[in-house]
Length: 69
Image (cartoon, rainbow, N blue to C red; front, side):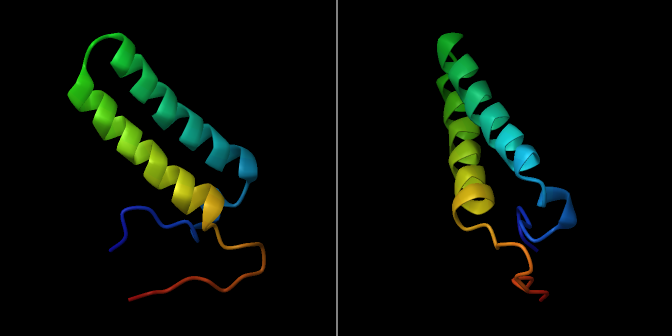
């Protein structure tokens, strides 16, 4: 089971993927500003992971990238 399935139809619109990345990285910045390094690192790592999965390695439209295991 994947942590995040970028081939799911929910992630098809670009705006949803961008909002998810901005919210996770923004929350990491908020945690840094409030002095919570553990949560900042946790949300920062989640934001980096979402950035890679949803924006960089995202399967293009019409791509049959789904790997059911």
